[in-house]
Figure 1 (spheres, rainbow, N blue to C red):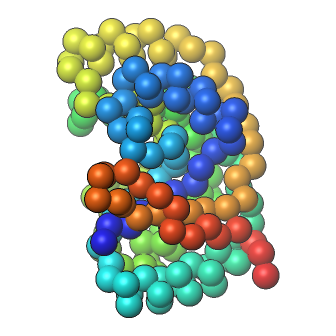
Figure 2 (cartoon, rainbow, N blue to C red):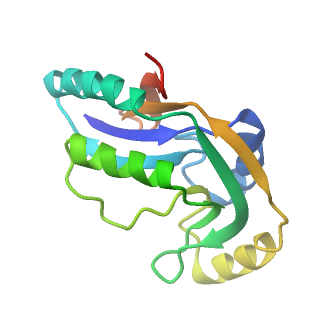
Length: 170
């Protein structure tokens, strides 16, 4: 089965992201707005028990994290994804590194760029048009996120929470 680890922002930020995602993100109906901490990895039912135990221990080492979104950005020319840029922090970077070091799935394919996707799989013209409009948004949002989520993929391609872990809890 396919798994991934994410942080979900507040409802307020999810609503803002979804106001764009419903128009510009074909994955809108498959997963809520999120910040990916560990990309998709395969695991068996036996392995996932070990993973959940490790996550319970690992998340105790991290305190709730401040997340600051300061602008709309894009991954172009690599791909036509548009996103809310989450300012990188040492804590976020360390959590990402720890998840990759301690859990199965190998090294990340790309460098860690904390973000919340608001548009993807756009044509070049559509990307240019939409990005040109959205980067003018004056976004400055800060919040504390106190939990991470282990998700799994259903047969229809959507993602659902397998387990939630509170950061810093004994």
